[in-house]
Length: 123
Image (cartoon, rainbow, N blue to C red; front, top):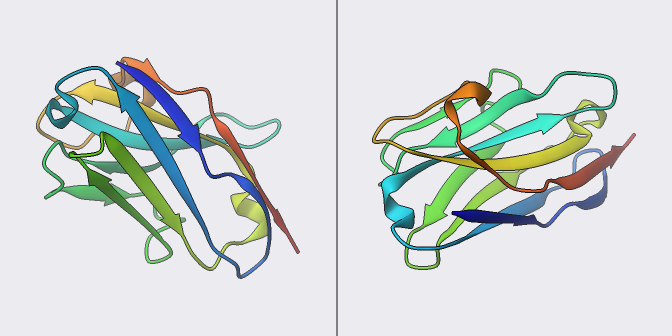
């Protein structure tokens, strides 16, 4: 599967953005999906994950209550709605996919990665 992330940009603190990740190929609904981010000078970190059917979701503590992951299997797309953005959310955001029925919070669990989209939050 190939992944294409989009929707990043510059936003003021407190604002919102919605990231999208479009997947090509078949059987998107068999993939669990995840969002990760990497800030300058830092390691890639987990943000959110959603199971193949959308019934299971997990978030990093730092984004719980502000970010929402969702998916539309009819459109082969996963979303990350980001509200109440903070300057510390500034990073390149990556979507990732792995075949599985659960949710997966470790980057090493994922086989497929998108190219990343930059989110910059100004103070």
